[in-house]
Image 1 (tube, helix red, strand yellow):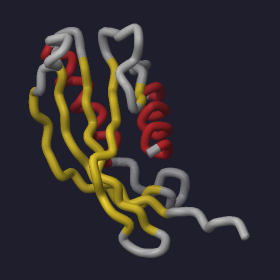
Image 2 (tube, rainbow, N blue to C red; image 1 turned 180 degrees about the vertical axis):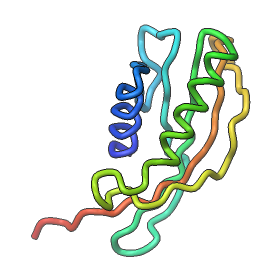
Image 3 (tube, rainbow, N blue to C red; image 1 turned 60 degrees about the vertical axis):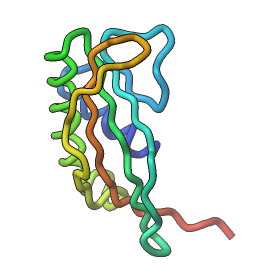
Image 4 (tube, rainbow, N blue to C red; image 1 turned 90 degrees about the vertical axis):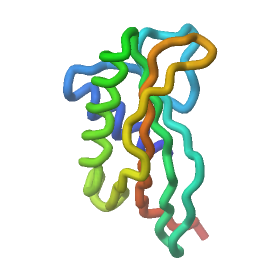
Length: 124
């Protein structure tokens, strides 16, 4: 999950979109941010983990949340090959949908991906 977070954060900044990307809702809550949550997935073999990640994008309007989700979606689907073979496949498993935050009523758009990640050998 740290690889996906680092990639998305760097890719957003490279495109002039400096928003927090993490696994928790920031405190204090900014107008725009992205939360990544591993909701499943499985190890495919000895070296491949394939987490399913829900991507939640908040904005100060539904349009802003939709735009942020669209950018995050495009960037994540372009991730294969980043850092060599650390991430070598991304598949969308749930397209974008509006999902207003029940606590804050802040606009939110969510989608889901599965990312094939190459694991690291354990040190002897």
